[in-house]
Structures are given as C-alpha cells and as structure tokens.
Image: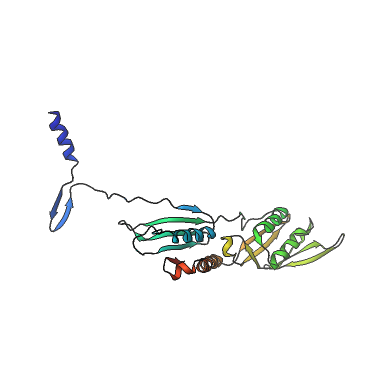
Length: 244
C-alpha cells in the first residue's frame, strides 16, 4: 500500500507531453538547466584590461570561447569597460570575463563649498589648466568681506581680492571656465569641459557643469583610442573586437 502511494506521488511529478493541433505541449511548467556562469574579475584600470588580454593571448585556447571567435571589449560608459565572450549560450547570454570600473574622486558639482574646502578640492581633483590657476588665485586671495560686494552681470562676477600686503583690487572671474576634473580612467586622459563658476556671500564657491554631458562621449573616445593603440596587434589578428 505504501509502495503504491509513493509510486503515485512520484508519478504526479512526471512531465507528460502531448500534441494538440500540431503543436507540442506539456502538462507542467518546465525550466531549462542554466549553464555555469563565470564570476568576472574586477579591476579598476585600463592597464589591467590590456594585461588581461595580452596574458590570455599567449595561452593556448585562452579565450574561453569556441573555435576562433574573438573576445568583445565593450566600453559601456566613461568609467566602465567589460570583456565578454563572443559566443552566447543557449539562453543568449554572454560570458562576462572581466569588469573594469573607475571610481572618480568626490567633487559635488552644483553645490557650494567654503573657500578653503573649494581650494583644496580644486588642487586635488583637477588637472592643471589656465582657468584653474585663475580660479585658485581668486579664491586663495579673497578678502572676507569681498563677496558681499560681488559685481554680477548674470554671466561673470567680479570680486575684491588682496594683491599686496595692504592693497585690494577688483578682478573679474571668467565664465564659463575650461577645467579637467578626474572623471575617467587615468590612462585615457581627462576630457576638458565647460563649467560655470559662481560665488556667493560668505566666500562660498561652486562649479556647475555646462557642457550637457558631452564630456562623457569624449571620455569614451579617449578610452577607445587608448585600447585601440595598446591592443593593435590583437585587433589586427581578430582576437578581440573593440566596441564603444
């Protein structure tokens, strides 16, 4: 009795197939067995991407793909590069082999900093440009009461700054300014873009992005150019495909 009951219960789990009007059907929901997924390596530089490709290229069947299919290097955005297999699984999923993500130094665009904090941020997270030097001179020599007497025509501002031990002069702050903050992989070079520099009472300063995000496309192109140069041999040999 117990044996028959167990056989009946087991039989309930069996999947039965049938053909209705020329189509195949089952009486239960069935699920495909998923293929193993590789856990991608995680790095934070373009040099690591180049090293990974060149090391694998030196090993037999190192691409982890079928036949002579190349790897795909995809530049997802200004701070993310992926290496994937070019052969997809039955579920049409690519194997992601490596993920490189750049973490930019923190600078809050669109928010006001006090003069000292702003000065430190400008020196630590921006590459040197002519406009950066002008801003540093203005911010570094502000008189405490100067921003109460700001001249503002809606585009540029003028403030009183110290020009000697006891003298004060009025200077005009340029706007927009061209700056190069660290926002993408160091190896690719930082794209220059436009910012609006504003000051308000109390010596507070802020930068507002003013290029509509165009710098992101410039950064992706810089990444592409770097990888194209460093992996020229592998690209020519059709071992990899570089995409942006």
